Amino acid sequence: MDLGDAATETPDSLSHENVFSPSVSEPKHDFREELVIRPLHSGDIYASFQFRTLWKTNFRENKATDHRFLRYATLPREIVCTENLTPWKKLLPCGSTAGLAVLLKSEKLFHSSFHSQAVHIRPICHDWECKATSWELRQTVNVVFDRHISAQGKREWSLFKMFSRTLTEACPLASSSKIYVDITDSPQGEQLELSPPTSLLSQAVALGDRRTFSVYDLKQQSTFGMTHSLNLLIRWKSNEGDMLRPLLHAERYVAGYGLHMGEIHTLMYNNHPYRSFPVLLLESVPWYLRLYIHTLTVTSKGKDNKPSYIHYQPSKDRVRPHLLEMLIQLPPISVTEVTVQFERALLKWTEYTPDPNHGFYVGSSVISSLVPSIVAMDTNMTQERPLFSSFFPNKEESTYFTRVYTEPLLVNLPTPDFSMPYNVICLTCTVVAVGYGSLYNLLTRSFQVEEPSPGLAKRIANVIRKMRGVPPL
Image (cartoon, rainbow, N blue to C red; front, side, top):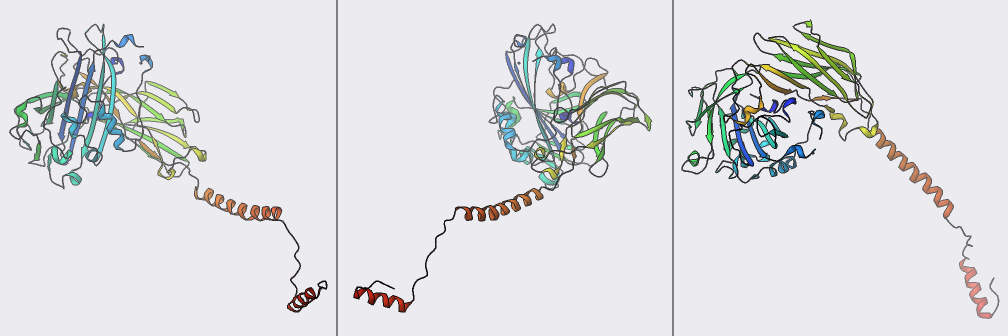
């Protein structure tokens, strides 16, 4: 259950999200935090932090943008740095001094197989008529720990092994602070052992499947026990079982050879046993990869799959990237491949990055869809539910909205030998120093003629002549 790759909002729900019941009085400000832990059968572990801060202010009085042009975007690559996490934690009401944020230690988060952090801000409605709106700030951190690196190869995890810290209290300003451990594959504890045990259970639908979670409520003092500290331990008992396969997932790669032509391949998987559904594919390609749109092909199960909608906006050199949007129908139990050829452009030498031989990053493909659910989803919005369940907003019981991001691409471009300009600069400086220096020396030096000094005999004779009062020779 990769909650980090799913969407937190649909395009139509940014300004009219009905999340509150008119019969339930809500505080003016509200903060909730939760941690979702899912043990993976490989022995790795997935942890997802989510913090939601809600301010009840009248959004419509402030015109902060035009929502008709509000879109989503991706960054292909961001350098790992603790400076990215420090200001992120300062947005939390309790900072990193209390609550689940205590576990966010940069040394452990960045020393992992995968990590991502995000900030989502959106207006949501107070009531069903949406007469007033609020600001919702949602902060997420997703991380996957490799047992071969962090757990010394053992199939055993704890909060201290993952984050080098334990929990002692919830954030005092939080109305809800909980930890959810996914035990769907081990409902009776036949594969997983949790310590300390908990009797609180919760069920939620994620990625079209009903999942079961053990719940640890940090607002209850009994959760911390006699030690006043919670170090949740997860131990594997069995290696059996299959991992959850999402109904929709995707991947992308670059093919071809040489530094002139290439191909971008995007693969979309529909694992539903009998239903097909449409997906909206968004490709944003930098201008220095010149797409040949006439080579665009879409195939499913070895046959052509004609998109029902295509929008293409060509790039302008050094101004804007290529923009390609397509609406594609994915057949059940199929792999749909989208292929397009491109030509690598030549850049100016000032446009290369400091490490041009490393390559250039291309942003992820964005895939949005209403995926059919295998189980019936609860559409009752009045009951309290986990924060992660809002990753899959739904308007009906048969589908749920999700947005998937593929991995970014690393593309090599024709790169000049930057050692040659260095050699030219050194040679030029040497020639200038030798040639111009010699010429300048000749033009500015003053010359004078000096007579050779007389010999010893002549000097002695002149001394004698001087004593006699005779002019020197």
